[in-house]
Length: 117
Image 1 (cartoon, rainbow, N blue to C red):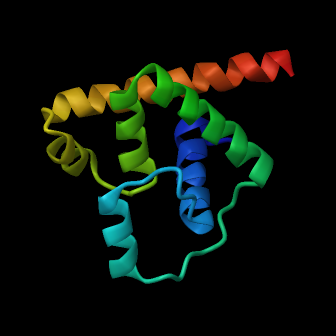
Image 2 (cartoon, rainbow, N blue to C red):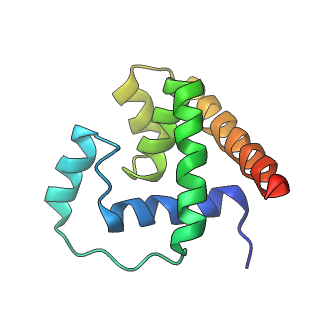
């Protein structure tokens, strides 16, 4: 079942949490993880797909750090868009716009690289 880019990003977020990748250092994420414990379910995405998404998110973070941070906080740290906005000192509508724009950018980036492969 294809859930689109948002479903793929949710799966990627679970994959990152399950693999505890240290490349995304967020104090809030680590505090949340400590509070929740260490039990993590197996994500429903294979490593190859998750790595493709991870590379796309890394490219986005290089291109637009603020947008990449919103994607990370929302999908990996599991924050609501309201909490993301507060954490970043942004109005909620701005954080929501960055989340939507980032998701669209990642979708286009994945599609671009899929055509090349």
